Image (cartoon, rainbow, N blue to C red; front, top):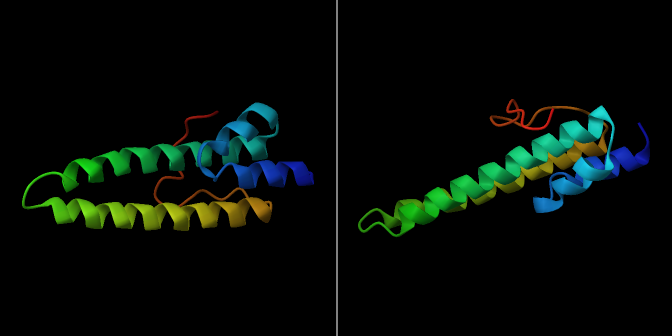
Length: 104
């Protein structure tokens, strides 16, 4: 593994930038982290939409706000975990969502 693989691995966790290692990286390491980044990205979108829907429902709208805040916090924590793992050259799955395989 070279330093480019680690850079691609780190980029995987920064929003839509998971596309960069998917397109440019050809190693198992970069594909692993691109998959983890994609799963994190999709989870944040789906949970963000769900919390947005909750926030407009009368009487329980505050729940949507709390859920949205927790989702955002979890996304940042998972992003940091993924970046640390990639920078250290490790292929560790993210907690909870790491077992989902979209890119093989």
